[in-house]
Image 1 (cartoon, rainbow, N blue to C red):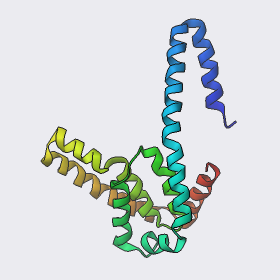
Image 2: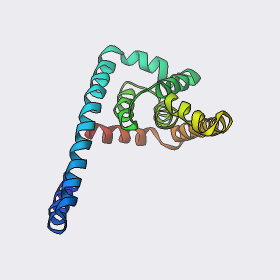
Image 3: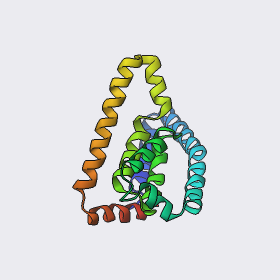
Image 4: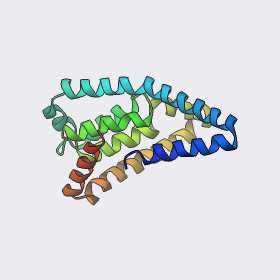
Length: 173
């Protein structure tokens, strides 16, 4: 049941090999390339998560990003997301660890949004390609929308629903 996609992919690959063997080779090359790139990215992410888990006490996370953190928690989430490195997929295990350590849900959601769209390298690239003024309009608009969305998300989901998200996430970690 867990490997439905893998099994379906393998069956598709076998069928494609009967139709066009060259296409099968291309698919296999792409698959191995993706696996290698993930092997380069994933181990450092897990190392950082392990260090985060061991070095940063739960009380610190609660104090800095917990329910009573206020604007300080949102600012910290912004800086953690904006000055991060790596693909967005790397942010999810970190976000899970933040939630487990007691971070406020809206701060974690905001962190994920900033990581995915407002990282410093992305902003610099936008400035060089779109110009400063348009980049600032885009990024300030996104920032405002992200803040509103994170705060709305915090209010829309009940504590039970947030706990259910955490339980489901635990199943995959």
